[in-house]
Image 1 (spheres, rainbow, N blue to C red):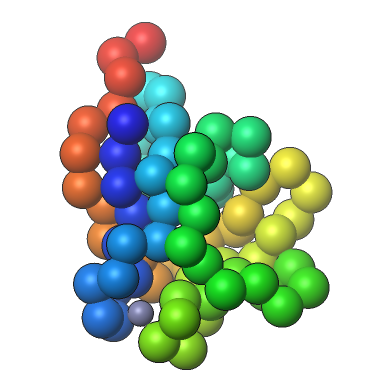
Image 2: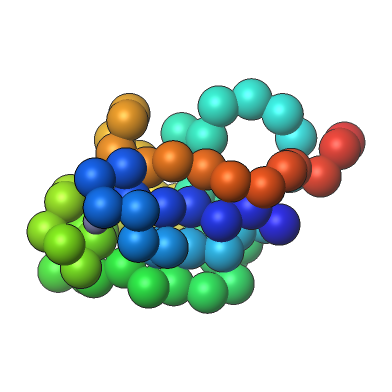
Length: 76
Ligand SMILES: [Zn+2]
């Protein structure tokens, strides 16, 4: 399980089940276990106002550099 934080203010946004190595570019909605983000339609933001990404179908397409990730992914 990893936690995803806002890169601007450090607020925790998601707890997320990441599988496999590699850069986090998408967040599958089904794998988010706790969600502190602010939604306006498909737009996903931090409570501080920083725009984090956009919901595109089954996942959130994250902006590069908008979040920081802590924790470790499951090994495949
Ligand atoms: Zn923030």
